[in-house]
Amino acid sequence: MSRHTSYRGTTIDMDSIRRENEKVPAVGNAQANAKGDMIRGGQVTKTADEIARERGRVQSAIINTGLKGPVPAAEDISLDKPKSTRTPVAVPVKKTKEVELPSGDIVIEDDNSDN
Image (cartoon, rainbow, N blue to C red):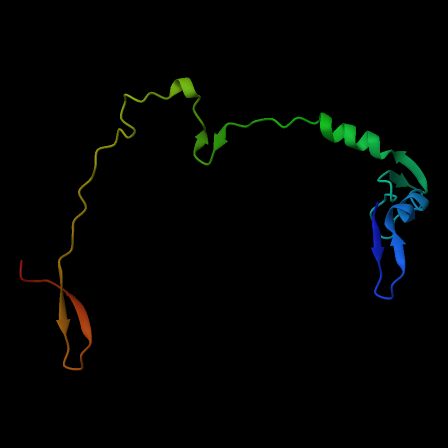
């Protein structure tokens, strides 16, 4: 029971309004009536019950892929083997030092004391 009271105090029963107008086409480009039936040219092409049954029948397929390719199955994953077979590469580190200028600013310069 969906009864609402307007600003002026009149009671509006939304359920009765829906029942009275369930065959009337909706305003706009929805191509449906208030009951939920799909209409075309004023005639009902699919009822709301048929639409609900079709949506319930659709089964989604599970896709086992990721951004890097197919995801391995659980039995393919071994916990004993290492995760990465690549050897780590040493990255050269550039030595720097901070120098304070007379103005109070701090500048980072290359440390040339090794050369």
